[in-house]
Image 1 (cartoon, each protein chain N blue to C red):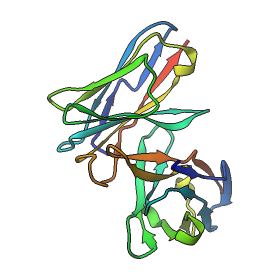
Image 2: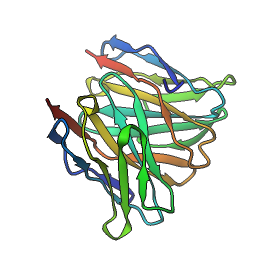
Image 3: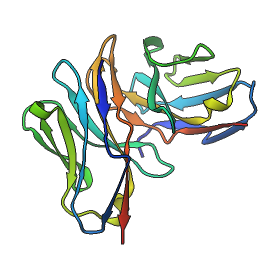
Length: 114
Length: 114
């Protein structure tokens, strides 16, 4: 058990809808990362937060947004969903994200868009 | 641009046989390299990491990896594979721009024959 909790485990929704994925980092970790894993793109870095502030952005679509709350949990919001958004979304956490401490991954949320 | 290449999409080995999974990276500075394993329905678990020093690093579950700067490689090895090692393996390099984040290879799926 990595200590990173993601909910829900599975999500099925229709095109055009909006969903929210939630992540609770390991106790003591201040930095949260979001990754998308799809068959055609592999593991893609989306966005990182550190102590409530956005720290780095990767291949995140404009339809997607995220935030990290004062209690350090994070939410990834996906809107105007398309079939191609179907993927496994991982959250990871690390102590600061400013050093090279390893990332600890949650078990992911599998999103299916129909 | 920084990248990680795992040339083998699938590898099948017999239980008890040795294993080597290939990883090549492209990164201008001294890389920090990682191997993660993803079992079905699970998140990514860190197997081992290379930061500096001894180029042969030991990890969990009997895995080791060797960093070869001249070949830009970080291959993962195990002398005797167990059926429970069947999983997907990801090589990753961490890069620093505004913060540290992992760039992953496309993964190698390991199948173990009884």
